[in-house]
Image (cartoon, rainbow, N blue to C red; front, side):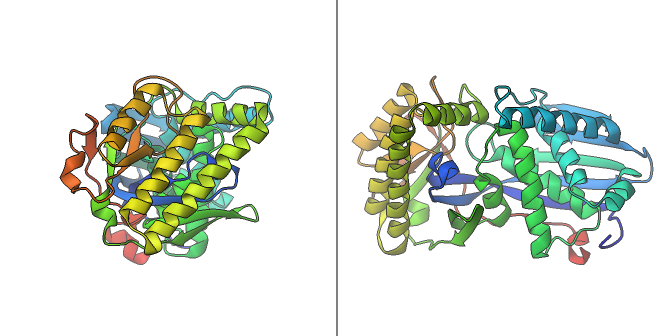
Length: 372
């Protein structure tokens, strides 16, 4: 035990955008990512009443639930077992479809990540969790990663873990990745790592581990890069990721070539942040978009909207998993290539998302953080 069980904690976690590199990052290529200042807030407290029970208050989902610790652990174990069969290739991927599933699994994985004696002490008390989020669900802006990191961090903080230690941040990241696996199948770990750290980051996989390095934030970046919302995709992130994996298994050489093109576009975008400008960034975005179209994660209707941005002198691409079909694919990244910022409005008939790029990562916002 690293300290007494805390009585209350309040924290927030940002959303994220993948500026370049989605899907290919799962297969070893780099990515450029950024935290965005749309935040998910978590309030958590332990109670000496309602011993052994967990109350969830999820007003964004219009849900209030109460569970026993045992029921949450059983739910988490079933999700873990289901994912294990999927990983082994025995079944197709299917996440739990309960609306509160991710939060319940996050509580269970957080408790499982603690030493047994610490977990037992926590479970002897009641737990109350309240989540409010500015991050739209299903838009490719990291809503599930923010919830996973936020809930895991809050539960572990209540158990007395020191949130400022490097080991604790690693433990939060590892447990949050397990949560995302239950919902998305084979996540890269980039989303949870980005919302935990914040900033603008280059992500690479080295010796099996993700490495996050800070990137420059040139003066032109906030004005040139905009986020547009194309609407909630018709397929889950897990379904799209699984489809890409199936494509890779069926056509490894062709799919590898697409991943390589995305990797080259990532390097071009990274160079634009260093000593280039918005025109260089737009060229990289356009290259990435064409590769994602070939990968099959940009539906024709969304590609047409992106074409309208290109016709106006800019470039755009999906940010996140995208979609296999339908009218929507979540968030889009739009680079205006030197045009005035306000000209993006109306270009593609899409709603701009007002969120600053490069936001803080996990942030404890209550006095309790000062002593953890």
